[in-house]
Length: 319
Image 1 (tube, rainbow, N blue to C red):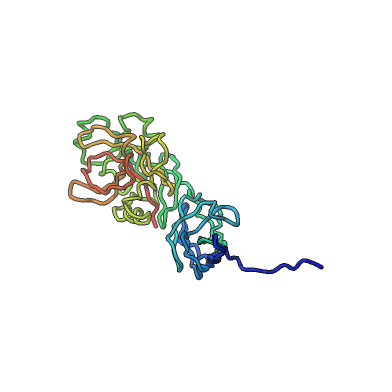
Image 2: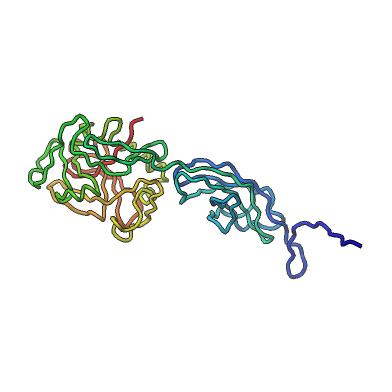
């Protein structure tokens, strides 16, 4: 006589042979807000299986059936819907994601969904000197990945290279310099420009411009606010930034470098520690807004200073 196999539910029993429930039942919600390195997903737990859901979130990998042994978020407990912020992705990559929920009976999963991250660096642009810059899309904006190095405005006019401190401190027109007047520094960090050069409107290649204060704010808001945006913009590691390079993930591909600066009396300082980037927005009759990143913090600082300051420049593509 053949053996009879009985189908049973997936209950787990405790030491007293009491049922402790089934695994949760849930669905995976659509993936949205996809960038080069981040996305938003989530799930909806319709049944806890008779036991409290103690962990929930989404898991993802490049294989088709990710599990909680792969990358995952942890987004609270209990039933109902939840959202999950997926971070640390690689640009131009296909991922699979599914929601999970865990109770005492085990872990249940929603259906897997696939998505592709944006392409990261999206092309190149060349300035009038022939310097080639990579570009990256962040939200709705396209930025250069490197600091500007041009020695000419886009109409072909040369920008004076002012080396002397006294001459620099007396400027009322556009000028540039190499950090510590050493051209090799510009190969890494780009040139330093005073704001008079920015204000010509001709510093970036045609079709590009120095971002306004509002456009810088658009960037940092998209990245979650000034308190965390700095780390997402900074190059990782300590090749250029000094230790600890706090919070640096460069998940945007922006690759901000600590190019230092030049003050209003012509003195240089802070390479390796600080990066400063001009906006095109005036603060007062003798000052303008700029952004600051530092080696020991993940913030973006919004500040203003004299138009005589030497600061780095990143260009933003025109709409």
